[in-house]
Image (cartoon, rainbow, N blue to C red; front, side, top):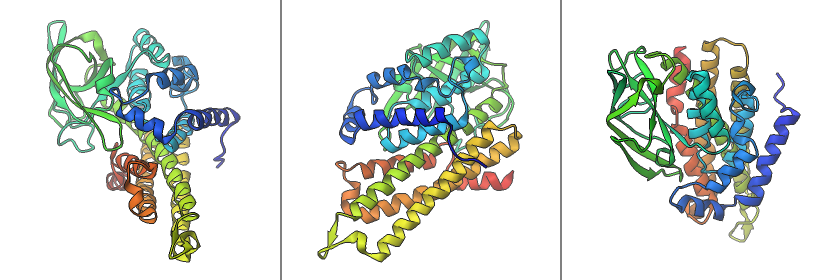
Length: 377
């Protein structure tokens, strides 16, 4: 199996690296996190101009290819810099659902706005008590004449406070845990009855609790066929899972590099700590964990791009997320331990990277969940 990137993918990787090196140091990131929006609108427009927002989409949908391998190339570099711009929430998750479900005219209009940087989106799918079960949906969508009334509450909605539209996963029929009866609706973030309680996650990204109280939308705002959205949601969540796993890879490699550099300058008892054999062994183990995680994430991305069946693709995603979760715990904790108290200060980016990978471990299912899912398939 060839794990090497193509020439185009290497060019994409290089463009992100140049941007990060020039414009996204730790101090700049900290200012962006503390801003009202929690992301840089200037950077977002630059992402659009450079074509990065078009990476997740096929050429037929106005994108640059849409392969999962293309996605992990860019996500890994984002992870190294710990970018807080809502790429996953808008382009990967919400944009992916639009590309998968929307009718041709609606799809073309929305994706054109997205890839040009003129549309911010959020996907509201998680609910209290749903854990990682995408089919457990209590939010209701009730038909009333030509309109649909949405009622319910969603949690951990990334980018909702900045979104122009929110994609709401709601139940039109069936019991709370039935696979059938789930639909996705486009809702204006400023619509009557929409209440957004925004907050900042521990990793610096914006999230929200969103309540829908008799929110009226037209039937045309439904994406795809009524009650048939769950398979598409599962497919896009799996794709996003591989994307954030690649982001974790970048952050873990950055943690490893910074830990090795620190060990070469920090002195203890008059001796450089990097000369201690015990610490050398621990950093070697960190390197091995990073490489194991990298191999399985690349394999999962290649599997998603292949003609393999849905079952094999799902298994590869869970295998990758499980392995990455183990690497997050090992590399993240070792990095903090070797740095000591300075590793958790706001002034050093190591602590912020650790918070980000810890958040990624929970996103779309933690290591334990994906290990169990893999075993059950």
